[in-house]
Amino acid sequence: MKKQLLTIAVLCAVAFTVNAQTEKGDNLIGGSISYSSDKRTPENLNNLTSQKSTNISITPRFGHFVSNNVAIGLSVGYIRSKNFYESNLSTPTSILIYNTESTNETFNIGPFVRYYVNIVDKFKFFGQGNAFFAFGKSVSVDGGSITVIPRSTKYKTTIYGAAINPGFAFFPTKRWAFEFSFPLVSYNNYKMKDDGNNVSSQAYQNEGFQFGFDSFNPSIGLNYHF
Image (cartoon, rainbow, N blue to C red; front, side, top):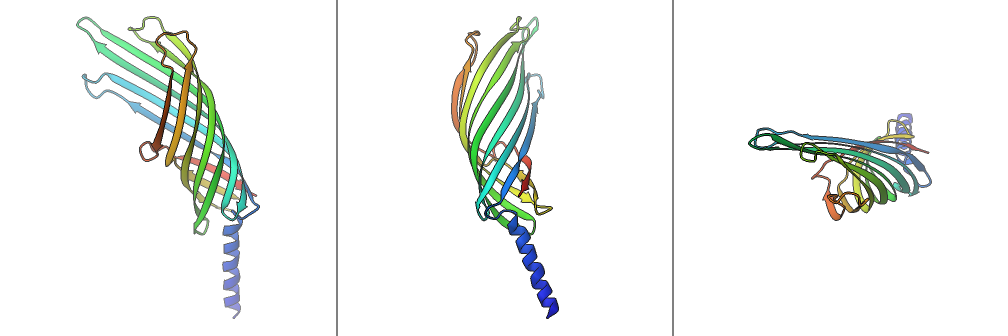
């Protein structure tokens, strides 16, 4: 009988530990970081185009659990990306080179709602939906033997959109959670306005949907629950 009571007590303690991390009235504070890099180089002389890009994002957040396993909150973020593109054109007398390098910085803010589902002890699956507004700046520099004189263009960017991000949370302790998540579906409305000093600038507006499986870009995060 004592063993049975002890077993029941242990099971209750485990259940309380699991649920207490995401129960009504609790809060979470933390953030995530994401990094991606892509490099494309020519494989033969018929393809003389190369490209390299890097992206990094940092997203702090705060959430409050309005009911068990359901949290709403606010996140802010910073994204920096850098892209380099080079193309070679062969002529009978020489090889002409054209390259462009762009650097983009963006700040964003927006609300989110998150729902947790228990998998096993210390592991949870979650789905998160969020909307955001972002603004930033971009600088593009054209160079190479075709351009001769490097040209620089500055842009202002505005973005608003929404996304669905699923993920997994691991709770090594009652208060701390490590997360792995990835974008599944997103909508973005992107607008870029140039400074008007370069007649060859590429100011434009773009609207579209993106599925995460087409461009897998995972992120890792850490949250403190209290």
